[in-house]
Image (cartoon, rainbow, N blue to C red; front, side, top):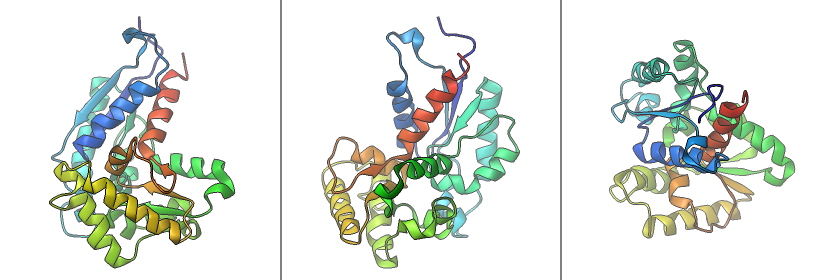
Length: 238
């Protein structure tokens, strides 16, 4: 029987749906359980109607903040004790969202910051595969330090990274194997020639695609860090 002392995990999802179910699965796999009843209580509100975060950051669309807050409040009312957001671009708005909620929102960038500090010199240069909105928001250098990061030039970002994520044959269109994996492999190999020691799957769905596929560089997956942190927090008072 589940302990009443375990914290209930909320996932503020839909950004995107693939990353949402993937995070739920990672929480399940990260939980030390031998039977169903030993797993954690997880509440998922997958709201794909939240306005596009990249467009909002670039000034090309409405803010997602109100919809994120409303979805977060749904999780509060349902009994969640903490919230995860499986979208790194959405973290640009995390402080505004947190102000309107009474339960903590786990900051994936804080988790990456701590992870990189623990790695030390082993990951002195880290490449970032992320949306244009995330890169232009400067959220990565804000948390991780500009000197550590290697980002694509404008041409590569637009015609390779964004096409991989948003293109008609991209990840958000449901293409997660074959040519997409080949293109990601080539992109990461290019980062290796630029001196990167590892690569951040800054669009969380990138990590979904790369699971189980060897790449030229180690991949830092924020969803793994979130899942591990959520399990630790949920069990911390047991």
